[in-house]
Length: 343
Ligand code: KG4
Ligand code: ZN
Image 1 (cartoon, rainbow, N blue to C red):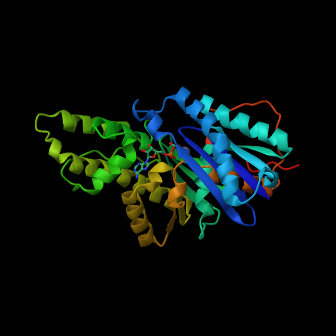
Image 2 (image 1 turned 180 degrees about the vertical axis):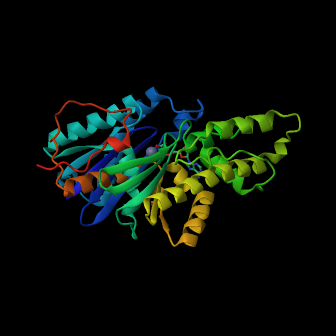
Image 3 (image 1 turned 90 degrees about the vertical axis):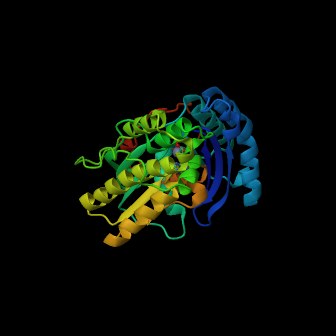
């Protein structure tokens, strides 16, 4: 069975073709970074329009790369939420139309389900159950994953997401857009330990996070009379160290509390090298293992959506065949999901 995946929840247009026997056949991502850079953040209306422009092109390129035509598509999976309403509507409308034209099943997929199942696309995947740390621009959550659609929330951020904290701090430090990866690159050139930044909620007995105070602490450093802009790489390193330390500590606590030994890290911040190094080291000490998606599948993409759709279809989920009402879910908690509904 070949599933076409469509991702348009934010500022990346993603298309992929996943084969339940042959694996990922092809995938294409178009990033809108250049489009939004001048505004310092994603402009929803521009995002929607660019998804409309890019989707047909990416579908054609993906099918060409896979060496097949639309007639080879047995199902269409698309991101139905959470995300920007207009951007989601573009993907939903496209997928429903394609499903109707081809008479094939159409599956609405939760964006974060795509992210947390994406490490299963690698050559050496984890087995259920595992703990997932979802760290993106919009979310920071620890989940217990029992199987497809079996997600229990263990803890989450009470304010900013980890990626949002990276982006906002990067903006404060005058770095370009998008800030997270640039801040991480700068941090690699810095020496941590010079600035005493807080470790928010590190000692709280729960599995929740808070990152907005950390951003305020950085504001205080750069607005003090003693601030020397030449120290920006060291400050970036200390900021990264603070975020990474809290993410690590709570992830390890989640493993201990659930008595599980596998941690899956997903979402854009999962690309952070320092986070990976610290998690790998800490987990190895306990005999636990950390799994990551392939680097190109860490940020938003269509492959994770096609894959989640394929897993649900393979489990017998009953779905419509296009032509239904086009509805999206801009806000949607992952823990509300249920295992594939059959019959
Ligand atoms: O999952 P994603 O592509 O989009 C969603 O938010 O759904 O994640 C994007 C986020 C952004 O906040 C970006 O700054 C952050 O991931 N990010 C990073 C790194 N690469 C991406 N943050 C820290 N270090 C990185 N290397
Ligand atoms: Zn995402």
